[in-house]
Image (tube, rainbow, N blue to C red; front, side, top):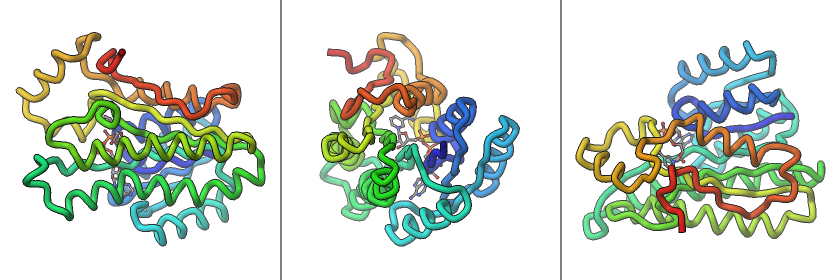
Length: 243
Ligand code: NAD
């Protein structure tokens, strides 16, 4: 079976691509800028005796996403598992938030997931099988000062997930979301030490999460045997958002 992971060259996407490969999935690795990192990942994946190819596309641009889906189909076949992982932050307090920073984050984190889901769903419907896994965030559940654009995009992706889950439940397609907490990647590296320390105080497990821990949860939803689980949001957050 073939899995596509968007924004897979580093961080959580990279760990997801590797975990899927370890579980015998062929992997289409999407990247936007980091071709060398994507190639290195692909070489690592091929060592696991599964197929892997890299595909450049800015998935926030529908035409680029569509072109990529055509290329994947031509060279690797139909996609069974789609992981909408590509994401960015452009933080700022509400009053100072520039419209272009609002739009850039919504385009990448939410609109791209819509484009890729729409592009994947036709073949999944025909095959009467599919797994769609969207990477949301705990801030899509609880909000975060300084991240109104990012939180809105990550809350939006939960609505998208649940609607797709309802619309395609009869086609053997599941759609689920993962809400990571504070995970050790380039996205969180840039935070100031005092910000990191104050976040840590709110994590019952008492540490930052690893990309591999998010990847495990993705693998759980990607499994054929998870057919009866759809429209769910699983927090991988060290207990940060438990109710
Ligand atoms: P990261 O910055 O290491 O990786 C993000 C990847 O997405 C990069 O490879 C980047 O090139 C790619 N990307 C961005 N825009 C793209 C586009 N338009 N087209 C194609 N690729 C694009 O960050 P990460 O922490 O690995 O983030 C992965 C996902 O996890 C994101 O959706 C992020 O919002 C989410 N997330 C991360 C955390 C965390 O604490 N790190 C927490 C919650 C959710």
